[in-house]
Picture (spheres, rainbow, N blue to C red):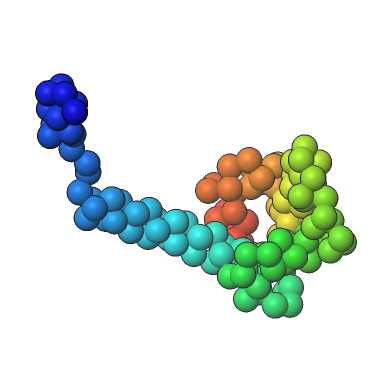
Length: 127
């Protein structure tokens, strides 16, 4: 090993493990907060549309089935949501159905599909 390699090894600094763990913990907390917010919104939408099993909003795959039930779309559409490019069209149609089930215009379904941080809370908490 030459002197340059030894100097490089001595100067190399790794980030402390505590910093990495702390950043990961912050990431998990932010993810959990966002997940909980959207689950609450979806549960409120299901309750306001008198859809059964509103608690499904907290379980990942069942969330999709709940959205399909709220939108009055067939459950087999879940397969279409896993097909690339087709899923975009189906998502828009589902969110338009959700907006119409809440008595809102189709524009709010489009907003919920593309900007869910604005559209879902509006559909959930508006009268």
